[in-house]
Image (cartoon, rainbow, N blue to C red):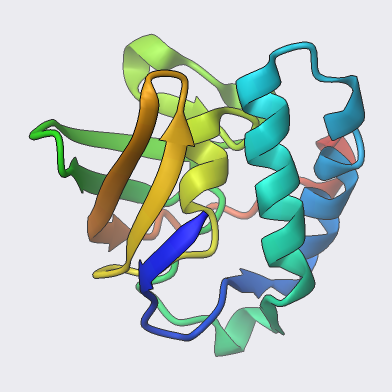
Length: 144
């Protein structure tokens, strides 16, 4: 992934969420979907350079589990969704799992960041328009 603009210079991940992400990402070798596996591998690489912060240090504009995000693509489409754990995924209600290409594309980025990400139909430039926190903590014991 090529990064066009990153407010904080790298991904910003809350410490407990980082542990959950690493557990989820360790399964990436088992994913049958090639696009998803590639997205997860890219996220794993980015996690290595991520800033890992305590809950009280997390900026409000960084995408986390349960954040509601609005993105705009350079292809002209716009989408709002909530980033959730795989068990809470519900596409009809705009709840997108971290284990989707879209979910993996935005985790840890901040409002205003622009990234280029490879989707099944090719690369697209995404700009994160807004991030709204839901202040709902994930249950780290529900990872697997």
